[in-house]
Image 1: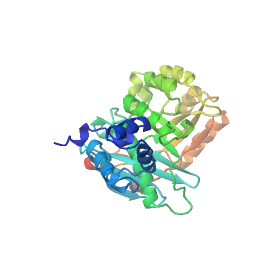
Image 2: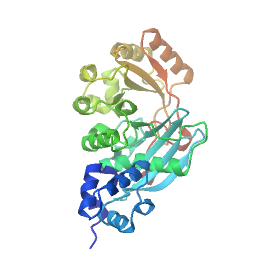
Image 3: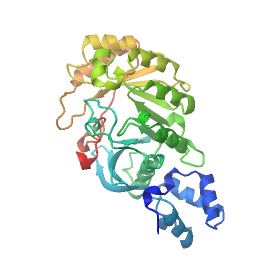
Image 4: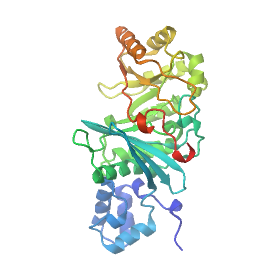
Length: 354
């Protein structure tokens, strides 16, 4: 009797050494493992599409591994080239992933959880209850699925058609899924894996400081902090984890996070009209920022049905940024992408529960 897929090891999570051991145990020559890995790294996970493998090896892969832990349910394309994917897991739960293409780079925004353990009131994902942590294989499979889609459905000529950058900014709080986060980071950077430089990987967190410390020790990739306020009382509401790890604790943690040469921590600041865009908010933010190590990314609020907030006007956001710059702080206003397909920052939520 065949074991159910959910108990099988997932092909996207395997390294070359493990594949070699498996292939050998199945009675095939070791070079076949490298062929399987080459297909996998291109985004081909269906053994039946691995054309240079013998049929009996394809059968062994299908029988002994969960080769495709994700199933594409829906793909939406924005007018600006952004693509949003809805995937179904083996469990039947769903998760979303976003491709953000630009002329010189292709960024995949991956999810780490189904739903989210946090309850930030401005975030659409936060309105979906936490359901599960994603495995490392399910996290990596999102990247591989996008690679396969780009190969089968290329972008227009003025947009980059390869995956070059990864951001853990999709559904969920990555630091609350440390096992999946660290395992998947290792696979992304492995020479026999996707071999993506740590300088091209960013992990976004609401500020779980012990986990940030451990990330810096093991996988010091780029770091982005969902700050949204530099006033504790205000941030307690916008980012409830602040009640456990307040701003002073976060400040100490960020001062110690290891940075690559000429790299900065990004402080993400979603601007909400009349909430965190006042002069006192600006003053507190300017006081919190360490200009030598950090930059501020001002984010437009992307509305979703039932949201209690409104975004700050564009003119006000630009003035806010200029005032920060006048204080010697690097500040930019992020251009919103994929808003017409609910793929912009803070809009992701499994369609099954929307």
